[in-house]
Image (cartoon, rainbow, N blue to C red; front, side, top):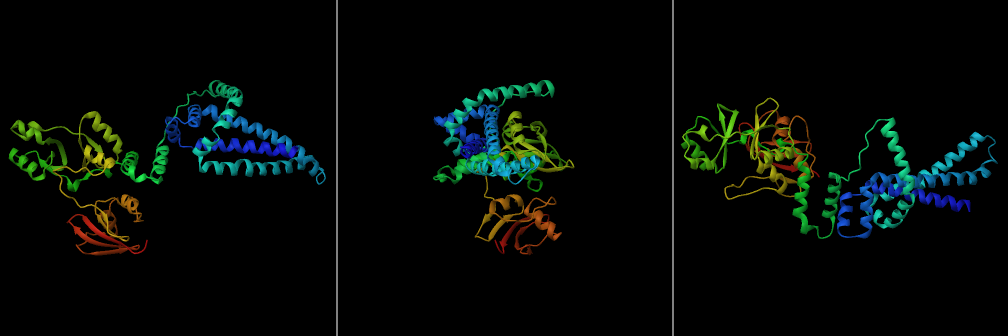
Length: 416
């Protein structure tokens, strides 16, 4: 009878421990989506999510009750057997504690928490009804415990008590998208999933990763005539042109092509102001700034206050939806994979992005960010067209190069 009671107490302790870790590890977004489908068990779990402190406290109360019962019963089981070998009460208590604790740690902590952590949402759904019954039965005790805790926090430790709020974190959405991508029929939602993933990644991107670099900026001098401005718009097919005074580090605004229909007398009369942002600024923050200010272009500054590049709202949006091509866009070179070991890369491609996109391990460093920077850092000089560079199992062939930077390379990986 005592052994049966101990086993039942262990089973309850394992259940409460496992449910607690499953609740903490569960994808709250998936729970809410299941609830929206009208599933009965999901409504119960969603209720627990909205009352997180109550739920966790209730599970802890249940676990502690089970452990107290287990401890009392194990003492009655072990004492008669151990008294034969040990006369000291202290040693007897120590041995009992070690044996009982080891059994609890393995069977009621490590095993259930490991198992329940693997499929937390499914576990919560399967055990939703018994969880609800225990929650209702033990809640009066947990409410009392919470009130005592709040009194201590508020009046003794002088801490403010805030109401629990359900929050769907980035991790929840990341996990959900991963599940969608691996599910059957995922090809039908591939584009939507990719856009959502890009939107999540945008919160981590910096402006420097989205901008048009300084060397590719098309701008015009403030002293240019209106005929020169018109010719520049026609040649470039752009809708906006940056305007500088003297050199590209002194950008003073921009002009829009539609203002040419107003027959302006000079460039200054149609000059529009534009914001200046640091290259370390978050891309999502800049997108919000564009929307709030009703501006669509900004100058990106480096740490020394010089012009690092420019960025438009289209550049930021393309990080989410992909390349936006209109009738005025010309075909631009893009990185591509030729076969399993051969790639065509652009000098301006970010090493981190290429590694992630093609599962490579190109060396990354604080000294550079792009493929061009990587090669220049290694060579310490500007290479010539068709030069071959080999290091760390990578074979680079220069396809295009300018006087100042590497524009395009072919990469062959020796072994993958």
